[in-house]
Image (cartoon, rainbow, N blue to C red; front, top):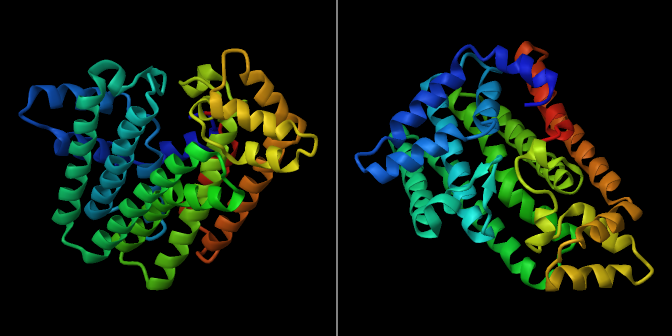
Length: 326
């Protein structure tokens, strides 16, 4: 992680992340050699584990995370990882977090089956918790995440995405799971209904701002930090907020040329044309403005809680979500 505030937060987690890591390894252990080999690779390159971190930090608003909270953190990470494995198959991605993707090494068939294995393990853990509130939250999230992916695939065919559709899509793809992290922390901490709702809204808004920052970095980030090529969304015919704003703001016919270029597939050397178009119409600046606005709205829900070390840690996390460079 590249934000000093986040490093401070991580140093205060007192081994809770290790508990998540140990639990995840235990859950994913298998007597099938191929599965174990792929799972070890996934765990080794699992990235920043932002969703478990957020779950643990949110639970600290009430007390130290209990075992149910740890299990919930593992489940959200399993769901997230499964979607990444499946996404890489759909997108034919060769790199994930600076390392070869699962499908680049083991091909699509194994990747799909491993993604299914992760989902099955997540479902098994949900049932083991024997908590209908938790099951309801996660079932709704799984449905929303699938809907978001299908909506994105449909819009990639026609490239007719509006800002409203974009927010609908990222709300399902990203906001839903991050909102669930916070709501699950509340439920496993036996919070009130009002507290649970406030934290769910905090997480959803934070998830939107987080995804917008991700989409900005795809245009404006550094490949060496991101661990993947930039301009990947455009090459995969995904229209995100910086480009939506630029297309909407263009009045000189350039927008039609850009959309036509993306529809037929951006050729080597044409990425700069798309990037220049976005900068000309302040697409990056507009998206950052919206990301910061959503962060502020997220924090309004958090401010219903008394000032505390835990709340300040969540405030730092929210700031990190919109300022990170990877």
